[in-house]
Length: 339
Image: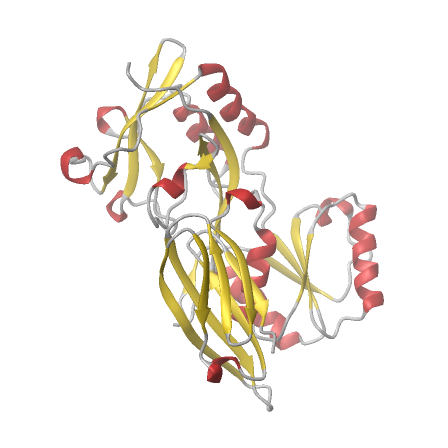
């Protein structure tokens, strides 16, 4: 086999959900990504909106079956010894398109080869193959250890959020939006008396702006006493899409150095954005006018090359109390506009 050895690892990743500018909803998906030679394999596939089959929201039995499949302990799901490496984040239909590859054994090594974009049972490698990607040859011990570690905590991500605030209508709308995109949400005024086992099911706590410092401290104490490490979100404004984006960012457990979108600065009529690989970036501005009405504007939508970028913003969209949401297929960042 001519393939050179590559390192194999795994890391938590996220397909960012949210309430989009056109009113559509995009599903939130937590999954485990494949790290090849220290870099997410997904980022080598252009700007692909997809997730691996190792998603946290599938039943444990299916998750375990996916791990065993990648270990070649089960028959391949597709003809020609092909396995799904990345698929549609909204459904499991092959017709939506999937990245597949042949996985086989060479001695104690595992080899991933013949990557292709597949929409039916018979991929056209000449037309839809990822030429120049792979083959990758992984040391068997490293490969089995990485995938085997998932079996002890199959589908263990915490995907519930505790919402604490005083504006019942906003909290109800926020909870409904989160549930639609696949994130559980509960509403309360405090965490006193909540059993520790229940507190451990939350990945984040979101505070409304009217929650006092003492109330926030009491909530943090409840989680500390339960030994639970959660992310805390300080709500920027009573704007549901903005709050959803803040919570999405808080739930992102992927290593920062392996994220696609790593920086957002909003000041002086422009946004500073940094991305680690070529990808589509969308910037949306939200603002409250003097009557506390919400205004939303799409201020940028385009493909950016890896590196830092300065993007001008429409002054009408960012006057007064305003906020910028930067979104890629895998992550989201939020910043208040500094004037």
